Structures are given as structure tokens and as C-alpha cells.
Length: 418
Image (tube, rainbow, N blue to C red; front, side, top):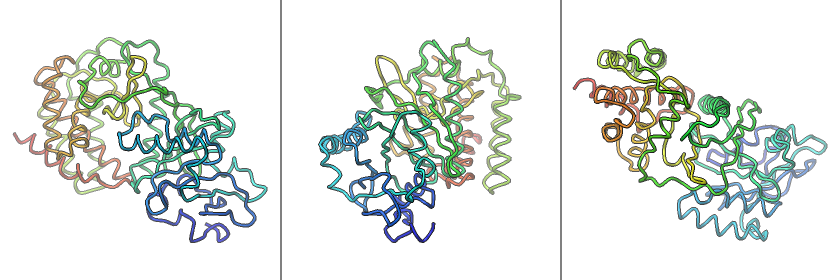
């Protein structure tokens, strides 16, 4: 950054979540970020309240339009945990009367006098692309994590939501943002598929300052979360897998493009990391054990978990399609739901999460047409797929998920040795 805009107060120099988020959102060197007044020769483009403090930043709250400030706090509050919901509701009430901003430090965003803010600021550029008029952007602040994506919640001055802009800022997150954009373009062509979940539309996708940015349609305003103890929605899983088409004829795992992709992914892992050799052996063991098992292949959401699902007007809503893909064994989404509930919600180790996959497939697999051999093949193939996903993210700069590496490889090898 140039000396004219870099000061000790510029949060982009920080090594915490606020530094990471502001570097991603305000990446142009000509943009000044100061806590307080703008530097000489600059004009103010936006102001944000840093909530709750500079030492514990959790949220960048847009100032200047009270209804937009309140909306940034209150939109989709029903999807949040009760404690977070209560705090946001209280702050949202203060924001409606313009009283929330003075309670927090103010981050001033400014640009050189005479410059075009639409060329320097992402929110300004997106306002042009969306033809929405001036936009106000709220942004959560999370600890630095190479697998997370800063997300701008975009609102008009009167508080109407206009979209969510996901920012792919490194190799891992750029790939995820691009993958979701591609999936949403395909899903937009599906119409009238019974039981298929409602899916937000892709509004625009751009490249910005070396980043990939996708803006996704706002969720329905009255969407409510899916209870974590709800049984799996089998009809919806089948609709996602088949996309309104009849069931595909079952084919052996051996010779499938899915197994070919696993083998290619394991080979890439072996070239990049010593643990990849274990993945190559795991794919070979999978082929030996289940190569003759006939499976139905189809699409999957890729991250089918309660926190990516909601209900609205009697319909299921699904978002975050960044891991979606075609030609995987039917049952992968069911397996993923069980695995992530155990790993994330209950904090169980990888071995217990793998056991949860077996239990879930044993209970509901017959509703997907899976016999005992198919259920074991789906579980074993899913676990290999999950480790390869872990490798792909690590290789793209996200670092290893320590809950899954090397523990998941240990689990896979033990399963194949039984």
C-alpha cells in the first residue's frame, strides 16, 4: 500500500479477522481505511461500525442509512443461534433510530478526491452490476481461516436485501465460489421438479482485484431453519440426485467416471504430499472391495447439512452449493449429513463420524434403493471422497483440517482391513 493511505490505524495491517476481511473487501491500494477521519485529499465513501470493538471485532455494520443498518443486523435472524439472535435484535432496534453507530468505533472508507468509487470499491461496483442504486454492505468478521469466504450482505438504503456477495480470495475459496456459481447456473434451468429444494439464483459473477465474486439472490425473508433433529428428507435427496429424471440404471463402481476421478485425485495428492500415497492405496482398496457393486449415480448438493437448509411457505430451501457436482453414488448427501452432524454438531472424532454414516445408511438407505452391499460401498466411497476434498482445500491454500487429517485416512484403512 502507498504511504499516503497506510497508517497505524489501517486495519488491513492487522493479522486477525478484521485484517483479513478488510484486505479482501477493500483490496485496492488507493482506498483508505481509517478509524476516525479520512486522510487529506480523500472523500468519504462509506462508514462502518466495528461491532463490538476493535479488540474483539465480529461485524462491520454499515452506517449512514438507519434502515439498512437495522436490516444488516435483523435479516434472517431466525436462522441464528438464540444468543446471537437476541443481541442482533437489540442492536437492530437501536439502529432503526440511528443510535447503534455512536456506541462502536467507526471505520471510515475513503477514496482519492476526483476518483470513481465504482472502480475502487466492491459494493459500488456491484450496485452498478445489479442496477440496484446505492448499496450498503454488512460483513461478518471471523477469525482468519483460508477456507472461509468474506461475505457482503447487500441492502438498499431502505433496508431491502439485494443479495449476498461471496468473495473467493485465495486458491481454495476462488474454486469454491466459481463452483457454486456454475452449480446455480445449472439449477436455474430446472423448473417444476417435484420435491427439489428451492435454490437461490445467481445474480452475477465477476472478477475483482484478483478475486472471484459471486452474488447470490437473498433467501426468502421468512425462511426458518431446519431443526437439527429432523429426519432426512429422502424425497428431496432423490430430487437433487435425479433432477426430475427417472432413476438411472445401476452401474458397477469399477469403470465409473467417479472412480476414475477418485484415482486421479489420489494421484495428484501423492505428487503433492507424502500422505497422498495412502490415498492411492485407499482408492485401489475401494476398487477391489466394491468394484463389482452396482450403484446408481447422480448429482449431489455436496454440503447437505442442517445449517444449509431452511423452510419457507411449506417448501425446503437449500443454499451453499459450492461442493455440488454430478456423477456420484446415490446416497452421498445422506452420508454427508450424518458425517457432519457427528463431526461438527456433536464434536465427535472422524471414526465416530464414519460410524454415524453407517448407521444413517442402515436406517434410511432402503428408501434410496440401497441394499447392504450398496450401503457399504457408498459409505466407503464417501469417506475417500471426503479425504480428497480435505486434500484439495489444503493444496489450494486452506491448510489441513486437523479433524480429518490424518485421522480419516486411518479410519479408511481400518475399514478396508476388516
